[in-house]
Length: 133
Image (cartoon, rainbow, N blue to C red; front, side):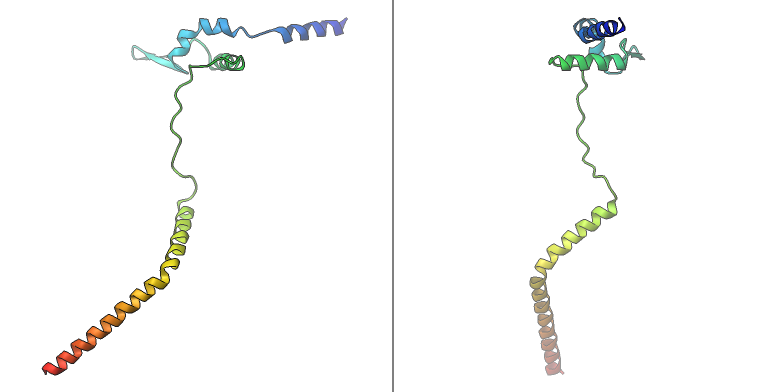
């Protein structure tokens, strides 16, 4: 006897469908006003439908394969990096150091050339100064 009652209750629950079409028609105006509420004549008015019921209605509509146009537009993703600035800067410094190490032979050659030119100029200036005296 109890087993039959339990089966009939399970059958009734399994057959129950949330009446989302009727709810969607009933709350269509409220849903189009916003997600949480709206301003009317300078006063905030909450929706006539609670967030829990709105979420359940949305879930049922999406599960049924229909479109849900009442969600607000998604914001642009955050571009600011997370983490400690010092970690990011040290990684950038290491990358720059590796890049500069690739250029090191050329830089050393330029430095030696400049130093040699400066030495030659100093010798020429000293020789001219000696000749003028």
